[in-house]
Image 1 (tube, rainbow, N blue to C red):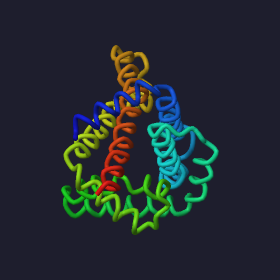
Image 2 (image 1 turned 90 degrees about the vertical axis):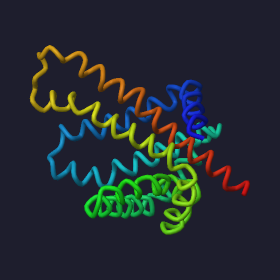
Image 3 (image 1 turned 180 degrees about the horizontal axis):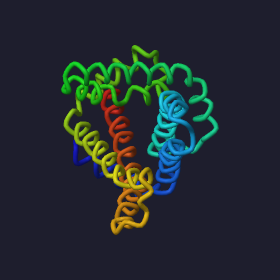
Length: 214
């Protein structure tokens, strides 16, 4: 299953390239740019309200591309209809993972894996918050290994961007490592992140189809 998900995700990204890469890049770039534009308190508010919702809506958009659908207007209407429920779901998800990490690290990792599909399910299925968490767990338990790998790669992608942001904060643009920091950041933003998003979305679609067949 792991090989199938990773390979199918690569094929989807190669087939639809800019349709997946461009919006994913823009969502992450805007969220990172605001860190340097607005005050810390304003960014904290945005990072818990607007940016997670944009990320989930973008993932739903990627899901529709993977499924071969092209009606953007319908997708946008459904996303808007679920905005409040989606925001509430993201807040609950963040609290659950944070509690898991504070108690012991392993519960936090477990919650991250089993509830990874929850925001997407809220939009795609229009389930209630409780049903979305429950269905996400049901799907994810059938693919713990590939999901753990994808989330590990997601953490790696985050750390790949740290040197670039440290350079921006310290304004050390003329250091000898300037070019490789920019190159690693751009690779993470324009290739690695879109691929991981495509892989997680593809995993959800694949597991959802299997569940329907049971």
